[in-house]
Image (cartoon, rainbow over all chains, first blue to last red; front, top):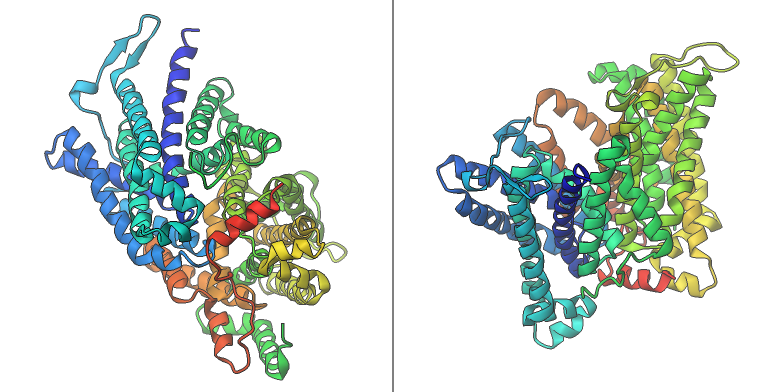
Length: 289
Length: 338
């Protein structure tokens, strides 16, 4: 038991990362029909920006706050200039556009920060381990777990209990109606895209200290996040959370017992879920409840 | 769809004369003959994407799964059973079909962006399998094999011989594709692309049509992958990766989805461009990504599609993607998912 407990906890943290990335992806996907293939690039970007800021003498906490915001500014610029003209076109175009951007970003990271990744260590306060009685655990992972829980709770409150969240869910259901009722939908799309990038950016900085920071690090979280969106039910907030944790656990436990099947395990879950529930666990897409 | 007319036939004839002369012309243009072979291979691969994207209206971003399965199918059958040239291609083609049979039933439940998302996810399964099952596939290092002799003749096709073999396959695929999209089946696919809900109300089992289209596409993709495997005599996991899918979809869009020769045009530009740029620039992914962006924003109908639009009386061409309200695929998905 003692050796499974940390793996379960690690799996849940990994799953929380998938959940957060998946929520950002499906926010953008459900409102605007854009499959954002560059989502992972924004995570990597925020990670590298935080690395550069800390390298320039900023402390970790400011870097954690500033780096995702810079990513958001870049993301919003991209949304306004390049993705917006594609909203009325077939989804293939925005998918290809963001895929192209992710290629450019990956190569740019490689040119600026090298191909092998950079060391990104958490601050002193968060280093070291803590004893939990039956096992010891790195403090930074506990911090990440706490931070991800806070992000998820904040998102739930924001989407379900604020006027903006209400407008956003309404816009997913009927864009024209909410526009006719006086909501600036173009602004809504922009804020929505920015929100998706913001949580991806924060997750990117957090992940940099736990997983690794290299040109592909964000993209490696993207595929499990896609699977999470499918398993949880596209457009379901709680589905993304449950799906993410489930997949995180599955990957973590299969890595322990059957390493060769670690990635395959999430596809097995996806296939089973789709057979039983074609719309995913909590599936009723477009509602975001 | 209109008949292509006399000038269309003339252009097609000129094109095939140029393709026949390529082994003579390529050296004068400082192109390796393998590049010409690659152009044809990827043109076949892009035609498989074109059938789904340009004529059926579903996005096969994940088609590299079938492409890679073709390469592995050919490679594994050569390595383990010492089969001949044509048999290995047939097995590669079959491998693509089997892949589609496995994931197709999952994909068919959804349409629009959900289909695309499912295909991205399921397409990656085979990548991880090839990557992880090291004792069968060689894992990350890939697997080497030799190009087998042609059955009945005992000759090993090389250089120009291999190019002409691929050109023959390309010609057969183009002819088959041309007949297919003009057949009642092909016309039904276009009807499904334009309005699937209406096609269902007309009594068509659209799931079955899309499934058959997916199987045909996977067969073509597997064939292209098998040819590629025989061309480089190597199969490796990245052939199954979504980046490979992205490249093939880009070729299709670049040339013009929904046109017969668009994929060839796209493959010519992509393969030759990659060859020149990747030797000249270590960071060639940046111009490649920029090509995606430029193509999507500047030439959404592709080069050939845009050029054909400029010809008089060609306004009724099939669009590469329906310029509907983006909610339409979502609504169509709600209507078609049971």
